[in-house]
Every structure is written in structure tokens, then in C-alpha cells.
Length: 163
Image 1 (cartoon, rainbow, N blue to C red):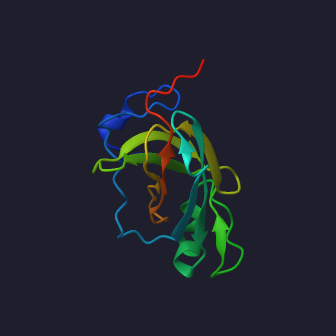
Image 2 (cartoon, rainbow, N blue to C red):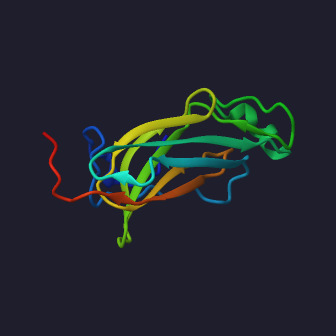
């Protein structure tokens, strides 16, 4: 749920079109009393060919500590914590995929995806320029926010046309 997502991102994106100038979502406050989340993230292939799709994938997990287990019943659609101190997958959570072109200071919202039952997510988007890809889990009342990045070089000619 991207409740704290900046208003500019609400505009509809067709396919994998990058919304230029869209604001990045705000990260959840660190004052929540929830489980410590971890986000693994990878963009392949590296390097990527200009205009060709890349696969953006990862997995969201939560550390099952005592505080998380106490608040667990409030977290909807989350996986069960089997052992305190272990990491378990978080299913059905929203992940924002962002992109920051090399040399730019602004993140662009590309799309949002949901984790599957096992906490994993995967989507394909076209790469047009080198830069940093970022996955963001906003967090919730009982789950901390988490973010991960992957820098990808894009090769190939800018004016290359496929027939």
C-alpha cells in the first residue's frame, strides 16, 4: 500500500514508461515498533542493451524478533514467524520500483509490484540509460521500511532503431 506515495506518482503509467519528474515515495518513519525487514534486489542483465527489457527482481523478508511476534496478528497477509531470530518471507506487500539516471539527483517512479506468497517479486522494464534502480518497501505499523539499490550500465547507441 503506497499510502505515503507522493501525489505526482498517482498519474497512470503505460507499460514500463518512466514518469519523468515523479517524486519518490517517502520512507516510513523509523519510530515504528515492528519487525526488521530486509530487501534483496537485483537487475539483470548487466550491462543492459539500450531500449531492451531488464528483469527487476528481489525478495522481502522480516526478522522474527519478539516485538514483531507480539504485533504479528495485526499484519495482514504476512507469513508466519516460525522461530524467533529467523528470517521469514513477507507475501502480498507492495514494492515501489524507482530509477535514478546517472548524473541526476531525482528518483523517478517506474512501477509498483506486489510480492508473491513467498515474498519474491519480479517485473520487466525497458532500460534506456545507465543509472541506479531502487526497490522500496514502505513499511507499516508493525513492519519497518526497507530499501535496496542496483546500479546498471546501459550500452548501445542512443539512436539505434530495430526493424
